[in-house]
Image (cartoon, rainbow, N blue to C red; front, side):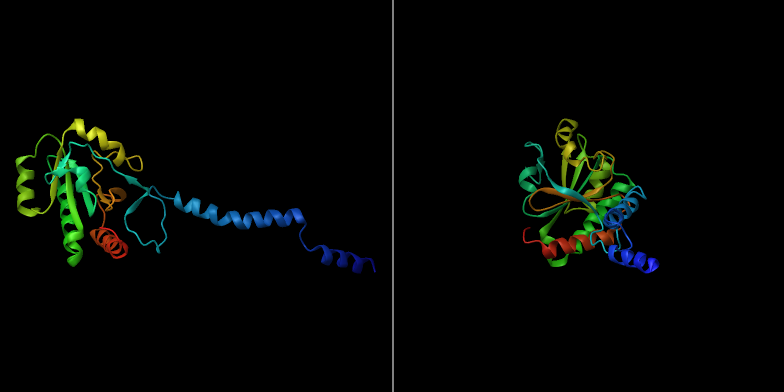
Length: 213
């Protein structure tokens, strides 16, 4: 009889005390967050699930850009140039090395590959310096006639450098391609070794779902 009574008490109270049940529930809720934290910090760039749709690195939240009033692009103020189109931007020096040349090529091809949407996209090379080198001028004239160029001296560059300081990396020497939306917001970037196929797919998706630009 005593054994039956003990069994009855256990069945009535359950196998766990209220405190144990609360601890177990807490662990169940915290485990996914802990696993995500571990996987995010398991590599330098963090882990992203295979289902992630964007290939570039998102700038979150999107960052409004305010360029110097006297910075000119295609004979207009840079602040008037950006709105209305998706802009692919590369920032580099007056001497365009192999990485620079590769990024300019990617930007050109990604834009051309948009086909009928190509008119919604513009490419911009911001040259940090006082003038273009002869080699860079020749490269632009030969291979990138449709790319806009802004020559920016150090006095101007310092004004917008904080806007392009993303993930602790300054714009000088970053070798990144930046995506700017038609409202003038910096919203995504790609490292120097980015796959152009991913850049293309991201832009196609942005153009497909965007109601602006």
